[in-house]
Every structure is written in C-alpha cells, then in structure tokens.
Image 1 (tube, one colour):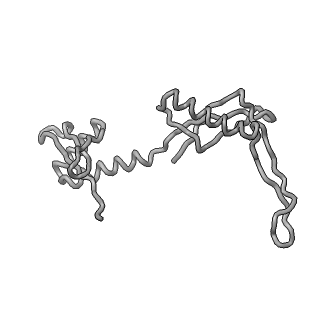
Image 2 (cartoon, helix red, strand yellow; image 1 turned 45 degrees about the vertical axis):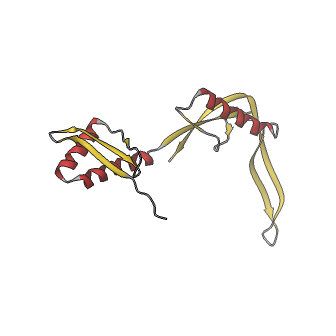
Image 3 (cartoon, rainbow, N blue to C red; image 1 turned 90 degrees about the horizontal axis):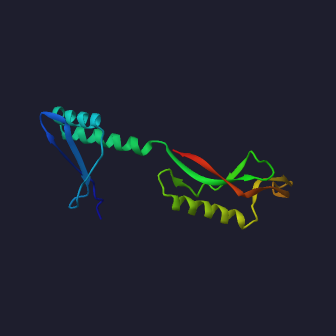
Length: 160
C-alpha cells in the first residue's frame, strides 16, 4: 500500500507576484487554499517566477513547519490549596485552547472538579521513603494537600 502525498497547485498572474495563491490537497480530492500573508504570497510568487514551482512549494512547506513548531498556549482550570492559598493544583491532561467555546471550558472545569472530588480534594504532592539493604522502599510517607473546590483559577500552559 503506497502512501499518498499532498499535491500543491499555484495560481497567479505573471506580472503581479502578490496575486499568487497556493492550494494543497490529496490527489483526486478538492484542494484547500493555504492562508498566507500578503508578504508571504509575494515572496512565493517571486520564487515561482524566478526559481520555479519547486522552490515556491518548498518555501510554503517551510512556512507550514514553522506554524506547527510555534509555541501553543493552552489553558485549563485548577483550584487553590487550602493549606497554602498562594499555590494551586490542576490537571495538565485536561486542557483547552484559548479559542474554545465557553461550554468546552466549563466541561474542562467540571472534569477537573470531579477528578479532585473523588478523593475529597486531596492531592498527593510528594512521596518520601527509606530504603532497606536491598534498595527496596520502606516507611513510605505520602504528603497530601487539599484543594479548595470553591475557588477555581485559570492556569495557562505553554506546550511546545
């Protein structure tokens, strides 16, 4: 079974490099336009006219890779701790984008609250133990903190 590769189509007027547009899609399917700024379109058109289509497509692929690498910012909800009101606890696996709807954000908040409510807001912060002669843990002590489920806070996560 062969892997399908994306096809790129470039359209524009020869004497106006800023009018060039590029479309991307699988063979036999409708191709979608890749959004580019005016400056990027002009450079792509200039490359297409002077160095050929391959260099213009390579430039657009470079732009797409840069967009993927760009640091994404997500948000989630957490709760302040009862023992130390300046610290908070949150679930990093439950996150949403900045552009998500209010309904999605409230579902995330509800999921975090349910996760913490299972143990009455108790969160394991650290584990301390001693080791015996064979490097096995003995005297295991877990340190817990309690989340104040009445005071939610927004937490911003930077995902690279």
